[in-house]
Length: 423
Image 1 (tube, one colour):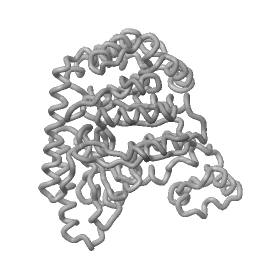
Image 2: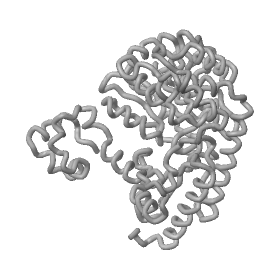
Image 3: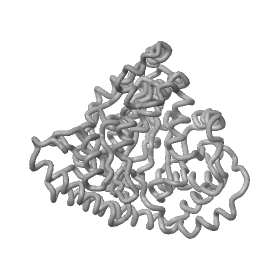
Image 4: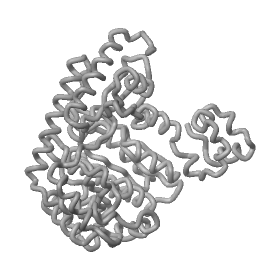
């Protein structure tokens, strides 16, 4: 549990904060610099982040199963070099007009979502910036924000860094679908300012059904709660695709939808996202954007525009490739006795490790040392995350499969002697 900022600052001024073992472990010889840190930094989940970073750090020779970053889609590779020569000057803050127009057409065609490219769209530096703009624009420190648990660790970091109160709705995955208790959702939303949704979910791969979205939208309207809907995995759903959340009548005018080119087109390195919502929600976000990173580079906006011209058939082939990867990943884990519910979307396996005699963080450190594979511990992803690890099958072909084989084999060996501690 983090030390409250006011108490931390008192201890820093008194010169005794270094007596706290967690602070000594995090800061080492940097204790003297704590007096310069803001309350936002002091109240961030720093210990969780340090543990996660340590478990994820991989050597150049390691196989990285931590990150969900597919390779660049082949249709964009050759075009990239020519775009670099064409790009020049500062683009307008809301984004290049032809990109916004092309994306509005995509929304109408694929999502059934009508958006005015002039007023309802904002091009951002990835969904991460979009989330930050949403939080800075609509919430003040001390207000409450609701999240589904488990959730992507950057949601928690972004909220805690801004000193919001976090309220969680527990979920479980059943046959690839995310399930939750509606009465708990109604209670958590009472008094919350906003709700963050990620579907399919990172880290579980669970998907919501349209009827689940309808109940969420109902309660958000009843509690007068804004919604940030993270749509980054929209093209990685392996069953029936639900309605886009923002098209639901109860959600339409209170939802900011965040779309990304990172997953669908493998453009994680180029940081392009699009924020979509009612103009009276989007406009004030431009103010927050001007105060941070005021535009997305021209060259990557041009690359994103090119990506939108790729035929839908190519995206469907890419989704099918990842469906095969998912099935193969589950098959590998099952071969070594690690049966899991196949994820309904995204490209992660949320693997329980309850029967091992170590936490997820310790296990990840051991796996990296013994197998040369980096996986993500669950501590910063869920309330009971110490009993889970997340494995991504988004790595290059061959590498991800070898990584899964090594991890599954090591887990099977440890399970064979469950009472033994890792050396």
